[in-house]
Length: 515
Image 1 (cartoon, one colour):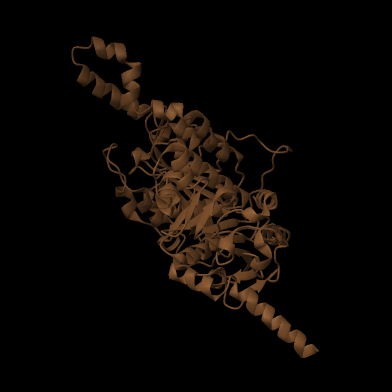
Image 2: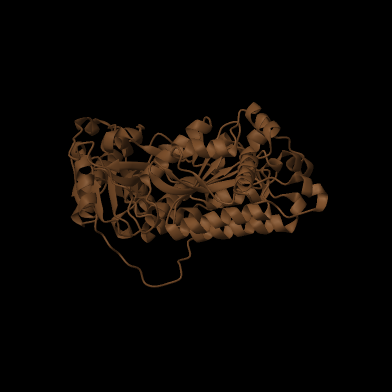
């Protein structure tokens, strides 16, 4: 009897491992795609995966569904370790009814999400799904709704990461959108609310699935994808690397590594990075790589809203979030997309106790009717709100231009940034000297016999008095003007000083950020 029961268990286990069966697994491989179990094995530490609900099946008999029962019911999930740290993982199994979500599949996913929240562990979801299972009607939609609700419960409590490796359509795209990070794989991943056929029927527009919702589209235009990977192997490695910067949950600090780079390391070359011609661009990433540990910078949203840079690094072994204007793109000005991109990144860092380092060189908010009509006021306020709301250690360095509202928005002192530095090349003012003189001295210039000479003299006088960091330093809104060579040492020292920072808010349910 004991032997027979063990044989039954072994048979059921084999059935669960086979998903939709050998033919469907072969078809998955022929598309150049791994199976759900292979993906999990690729992500987690070898031998660490413990499956939950391997024998779950659907309980529907209509539409010939009784003949379409598979152990696991289209979702593989459980707990494991990733680089030695606990995590919960689930993967849609495309070999089972196209990876469509059933009522029971949703119950499995939400069970894992509850475990993740209760135990304070990150959760990783791997998408390869045809969406809601039509044969189950409203129950499959209810399943998606339950997942969305649990995404909300986990938000700000444990990190949530989505790997989009196959199709996601309709309701299956919204759970990824509610997670903290989405990584898409080129050529195999697509995400859209309505597919190309519906777009053609309703709008008469012909577009491919890749152009409509592929990794390149979402990585550069919509901003849905925070990271884009060339293949599944790179995708899983990027997830492991991302998790290495993050704490397990909101009650912990990010993991801190031992010293591997001299905290006081100087770089005299930084003094020549900013061109003397203020109109000439330069690459802010050169400065970022110079000041972080081992020149290791993990960029988020690299292809989207490139006029601002966000990502993770370590300084003195401590994980930090970097926010920096990029003078190479739109002169580093703030627009709708860059404001939203930076605001969401800052809010994640604040939720998970990650200090924020801000590098500033921006001429202001992007002008123009397109920006105004599409809501630069509304979207631009998100950045202000995010910095005001953040209670983690905040260190800001003004490198070049810091003008007008953008000076305020980029982590200024009055948004309660803890330490504000500036290089001697910094220019903090309402307007640049040339523009300010053009407004303030319009009548004098118009009446002058030599307006060019007058403009040059007035511009130099304005720059000497206002368009520099010393006025800000005289009012204490800049704490110190530092030699560029010692930037790394200065920021690491400030972060160390702030390591025990604690701040509380007036009790309330939540604020009302302008979404």
